[in-house]
Image (cartoon, rainbow, N blue to C red; front, side, top):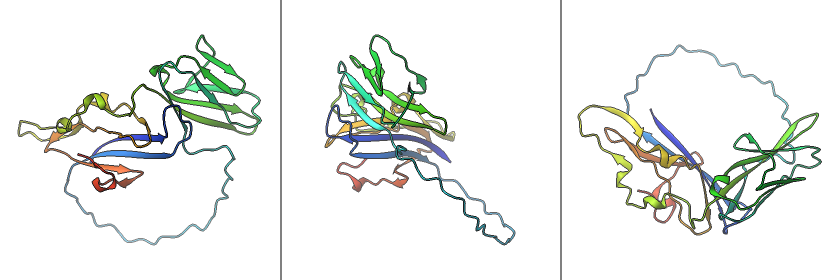
Length: 227
């Protein structure tokens, strides 16, 4: 029993980098020890289904992760839809259709944003509807003037990440500051430090575990580790 919060981060050589060097998914878990009740189960025979379903060959333009774009406020941002032979391209931002306006220009396979602001950050997608299937290309855009991404404004020793309960009443684990955990993408230039925060409370005090790409992330995996 516990709570889960997930982040992703991309790393590149600097502001404006379009090539993702490293990609990972961090998961923060709050774990509460509980008693386990074992129930006797009747024996049964397992019959293996040998039917093999034919696999559909992946298309050339299917991707597992979005391209990461990092820009500073005021810069112009240009995204290119790499869908081949697309007769019609449709753009969305965070699932909402995008059309041209005084700052957004759509020219062929390009989406241009003039004078980018932090509000332009988000998940962009271009899709081409065809008679057989519909393909989509994704872009994760982060517009920030910070050198590194994380909770730098709350650069403390992390002691407030756990809130102790003064009463003797038992309480399930909970997140104490969900606003700090809304930032899901952390785009950081190479060799910079990135921070993830999981402020939690409960009685007894919850135990924190970190996962990266589904595997436990230990302190010795990086210089500085975690607190």
